[in-house]
Image 1 (cartoon, rainbow, N blue to C red):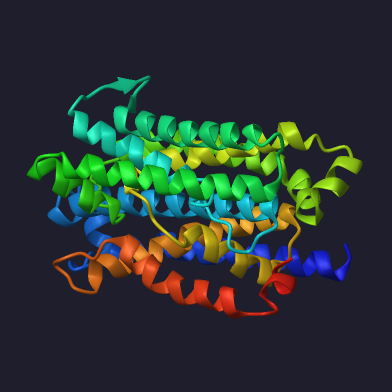
Image 2 (tube, rainbow, N blue to C red; image 1 turned 45 degrees about the horizontal axis):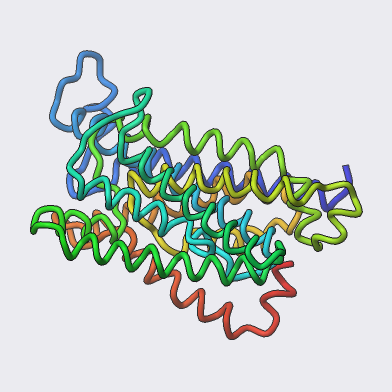
Length: 336
């Protein structure tokens, strides 16, 4: 094993230990102090045990897997478009999922498919329809260029956002407030139902991305080089879009749209561990999950007993990072 590989594996181990430490510590942090004895003592039925297992543990798991899904989706988009500012919002995936969930809330219909809630299915369908619309606009130009897809994604993003505002405007007070609060992004869940609703989307989408790490490496260098090395770009791109849409749909249905995680985390991990996706993928997954878990812990403790929407926390951290990327002349060369 050469020294660079050894350093990357050591870095991965550090990311793993950091993620495990965050998962182990954050459930005990909150407005109410919880002791280990009240949780793990035999036959314990205390209020603290109910809060820990019924509220905090599911919420921590939701935060971790949502952050991981958003981060690896951003990583995939940045590799596909070779653009340091690419995020799950770039192609309207997040706004499409948000629109699907908002329409579900407005309709008042309640259903489930194979145990998966209707809002999760609606968000996934919204994200897939957004991708199909982007595809249609791209094919109308008789090309599959990155620039055309980015422009089509921006157009779809604004279109879905406009429809969301219209949906909120025609809703009654209860539905309007629910949609507005949900659009801020939050992790106010109780019980493991939301965890089970989101997990299939994250696991399947993440597995697809993990098996395409070599293709992502080649696409980062350039589509022409990827094609010359045997990568079928026209087939790989739709598969990547499907995987990211699957994850974003599952996350948005439960948490609402949470900005900047998919932009910040891949850059930070790439600067630490390098651009090789075999190492970057697990690092981004672990650090993204830990990052959103910490943000959620801050959101529920800074002004307790009230809560700050976690989307507000990530935006406050992400906006300066975005400006730094925008103004930095060396950011792109450092990241690629």
